[in-house]
Image (cartoon, rainbow over all chains, first blue to last red; front, side, top):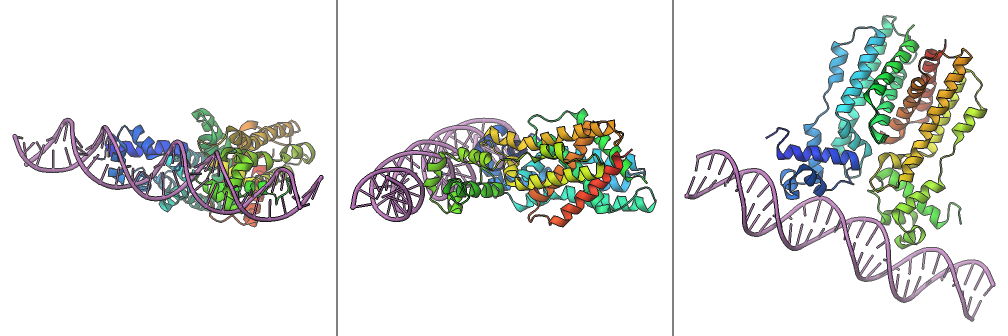
Length: 196
Length: 196
DNA sequence: CTTCAATGCAAGTACTTACTTACATCGTTA
DNA sequence: TAACGATGTAAGTAAGTACTTGCATTGAAG
């Protein structure tokens, strides 16, 4: 019973939805059960406690590491094209896992440590990969380097700030097209700044 | 009685501290009173409810709009110098009000609407001022423009992402120097990208 | 000395929340 | 048919939380 219509999965998805909206503390087990269309007791029979329910959600709907694969396989050594692909992939991946990310981002003193670690992995990984990429490109004289790590951070934090502003603060989600436009423009900008 | 040692102010400051740390929902009135060194009843005598206490905190420890003043008075029309000053001022201002910002950022279904509006003002204002600045600079051929608004957003979101990563996610605050270095490097980067 | 406002203290109310227990229902499978 | 596992229902527990009430204490002002 691991398909999306099973009782367990209905509970996990309902919990993610509600907690992303109202925070871990602000979401009650009664609400979660109601949203999943089952009795509250069933929630405790399946997961024991509220914390374990959230942990199960993180284990089941896991971050895919498509970023690592991307850097290994899909980059072609052409700055604009590569940065565009990186940025697009980052936003796609973050959007898919946005609710789990938001829950960790809002935080709570009752949140299991596991949750924070999982949410921090994605950005950390990107920083490492991007720094290595810039160094490799500069060795081919395709990028002008001053401080690879800070340049990578600039690109990363720009995308991170964009993601948060679009998905966390905004009442209604930003339309796809305007985020795409932003990505293109910002990649153009970085390409101009980094090209020798 | 409006000095920092008055009972009211001790309560306001304690509330801000605790709520920034544990969220609005996760902070109890008993804790706040204890941290302020007064009885819980005194809290209710002064502010009536928990919500009104937070509203009072926002009214008292208000965002200064030093950004507007900065754009009107201190910019000299030299791209690198101006962007550096803007970025530094932004981070200084955000840092001073970081706890109020964090409380709004973490959110809760019980937070007064006023709180969200106040927290959103600062970034919105910066976007407007920065866009106008870029347009004005391009008319003097000091900046190469493609889409002023998206270019301003790129700069803004980069700084926003940096601020959040440094002050929200990190367990211990980032050392001053490394943020300063980031600011310099990122401004250099943008200057190179925008200079004709 | 008296008055009065601010505060502390003790107790309590009304409500919510995570979590439990006991029992009934129902569909599947042996 | 009989047994069983998953679920619903009803009721309850223990703890916490925002907020209230009544009374005693104190310290400064008149």
